Amino acid sequence: MLNIALLLVVAIVGLVCFALRALPRIHKPLLGHDAWAILLTVDQLKKGEGYNGITRYFLLGGDHDYPPLFMYFLSLFPSSWLRRYNWAINPIMDSVNVAVLIFFGNLLTGDLVFSAIAGLIYSFTPVVLEESLILNTRVFGMMLFNVTLVNFVLYQLWNSPVFILCVIAGGILTLLSHKFATEVLFLLFVCFTVTSWSYVPVAVLVVIFLGALAFSGGFYLKILRGQLGINRFWLEHYKDYGARYLVSGVGRKNGRSKSPAEGTGCSGSPVRRLWNRTKKANPLYWLLSLNPFNPFALVVILLPFAGIERMWEWVPLQWSILTLVFFHAATYLRFLGHYPGRAQFLDYNAFPTALLCAVLVWESFSYLRLLVMGVAFLLALIQNVRSWTRIRTYNRSDDQSIMGEIFDYLRRSPKDGVICLPASHTYAVPYFSGKKVFYTMSARNYEKLAAFFPVLTVPVDVLSREYGINFVIVDTMVVAVEALDLNGFKLVMERSGYVLFEKHT
Image (cartoon, rainbow, N blue to C red; front, side):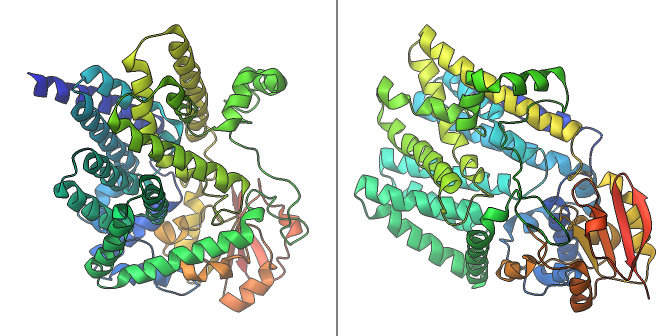
């Protein structure tokens, strides 16, 4: 009976998790940036072109050095299904995260109410909810990462070599699945070595690295070099992230985009106007500014003051607090160049945070604890509404459906070579039109992208001559066409605020 009840809890909470992520995507199948690079890679694998087959669609060379496991996993499914239902993939995988959390919570406490609370908190956590709205590799990496850390917690409790073997296996799969997950795994295990005064975590890291190297036939070295390349790129260019894209033909910083705490709800709506007018006196605004991506993490900071009563809470507490520290270090310091991707640290914070917030609710009832959790839930709901609104209404930079006629024109043309200003639709161009774009799948070549990403620093006509670019797609909501030097190009199409220029023959 208990097993049936547990499975029922998993099914119900998993369905809630799936619905929160999938419902905003109904009737919007063509959303995302990374989705089209992923699906294009999968198509090349299915055609027998190999993992490097996708590189022929990019004007900048170099091997495809992204961790490949997710793409190989997706290649097991029909391409037509992936194209039609790609919006469901991440919600399904994040529901698996919820299932792992519920089983883990039940194993630790034997309490279904506790497990259900943890699963529901995770389901409403803004950072992982937003990751699941659009197809990317992150949720797959999070899933393997969480399984790896769960087994590490169980090893700390029961000291069984079976759990260490599971940690090693999960770690190897994590390294071959997602670069950021690898980085967080490395940072956590180094910190665990210090906090526990044990050589085991760092020894496990070494075995995981050697295992990934052997399992991939040496390909992991390319992945690692690519990861270092990305870090170098953002160490150099992190200040340009969020800068205004272009002024007088060359991109320069003269203003930054708003933080996630600054915009909530529909643009111009009464709710947003009230929020903006009262934000300086609004305690919710300041709390949300502290941690907009996972307000529940603020609750965990209070847990040590409430008292740690169970041995199994220590590792999840370190896991939660350390990932929160990494997030703030990446926000305010030049921490591995990760200002642009800082929110991803909280992807790996959501699982232990949900578990520990459930502890706070479950172990003893008080109105103060209820108030704290209620405020955290309200902050999470504010962020989630913002994410849902962006998907349902303000998804311009994600929405490939409004580019259909432009893609059709490119597909019919005998010419090749496209640049997107800004880069939002870059991966969609080869997927929907078959044309080469100014970009690369080799992270070691990212420095060459500084010509136009994250801001435009090289005139378009220079890039056109050097790389054989014959088409320029401009989002006029971001880039003033008159500020671009497009001599030799003619306007051929304008659709939904996007303009397509073609080079004269």
